[in-house]
Length: 289
Image (cartoon, rainbow, N blue to C red):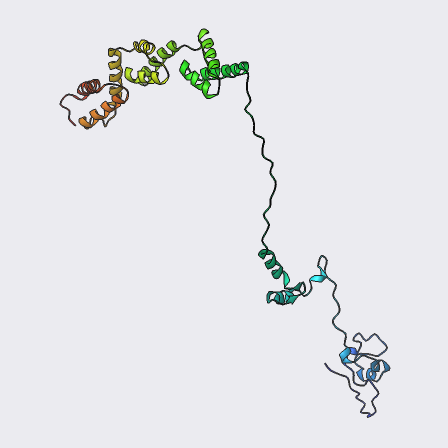
């Protein structure tokens, strides 16, 4: 930093002849004179009273901006010292040491007393309540589709209706003819023979699964005689032979058609006879390919 000297050449310079330039008022608005008149100012009493260079004031203190916390000043250097294991502005060890101490401390498991749930006792219904519940079940089942008595009883028992109440309900429904196994069996035979082309043996097996067998099943199956059964089988075979690929290979086509009739309950002898006859009539006896 530059200093001012007495340019008059006098050996008896007054005290304060050499002073730092920072002590000179740069605005020139004081009584010390114009900034260009440094020698005159150096000989003044104000220059002699000016502070020494060691006593130079520091930079002006800046106020923190809005929302800034003054306590965070110097954090950058303190972070470095904390990372190196030294002491920072936040105390010995820094935040990382405290975090490590927290992680090293095992957490105690949370325990909470649980009160055991009271066991719910099954609600006992009266016979009238069971009967009302059973009637609703039967009506819903009959609304969906026709059911046999055995099917309805199975459903009632699944819904935990006592057996004696289920029997009483079904007898009452039979009296008003909403449950009729004979009518159900006859309608089932007609429907399965017409819609699926099933033989009597297949329909008889289905009736047994629904709880209808014996004389009741035989009586319902009398609707299908040998002639009507063969006619149904022939219609099935002729519909399948309309496919263009049927007449390509006789052996393969016959085997496939016989298997289809067997799955519908027809005996092998009846199936082979009907398929071979239908093949000869459609493609001729000598048509091998």
